[in-house]
Image (cartoon, rainbow, N blue to C red; front, side, top):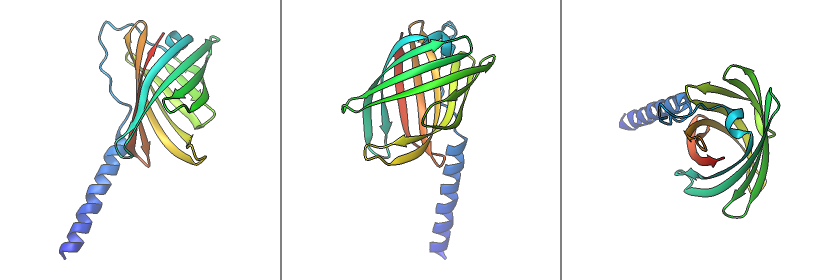
Length: 180
C-alpha cells in the first residue's frame, strides 16, 4: 500500500513538473523604460559580436562561445549569418532568414530548424520559439526546443537569453550579450 502511494505521488509530482515546464515561455528580461526600441532588422543589420555560454545543470556543462553575426536587410527579409566559435575550438555556421510578415511579427527559418520559428516583438523585446536538430560532436542529432528573449541593454548592446528543453523539460540555458 505504501509503495503504491509513493509511486502515485512520484507520478503526480512528475506530471506536474512536466506540465509546468511545458507551459514555460521565453525567459523574462527586465527592460528599462528608456531603453531604445528593438527590432531584429534594426539591431542585427551589419556586424555584431556576441559572447556568452550554454550551461546545463543536468549535464554539468558550461560551454563558453563567441558568435559573430553578419546581417543583411532587404526591406522584407533579414538574412543573418552566425559564425560560432566555442571555447574548445569547435566552429559552426548557421544562417537565419527572418521574413517580416506584419508589424512586429516574423517567420524564421534556419537549416537545422524544424518548420518555422515563431518570432514576435513583445513590448521592447523580441521573442523566438523554435525546434532544432542539434548535432553533437559524435555526429548524433538531438531534437531540442528553444525559447529566446532578446532585450536591449543600450543602443549598442542586446541580451539574448534562451531556455533549451527536451520533451517540455528544461535541460539548459543560453546567455549571450551582443555588441554592435
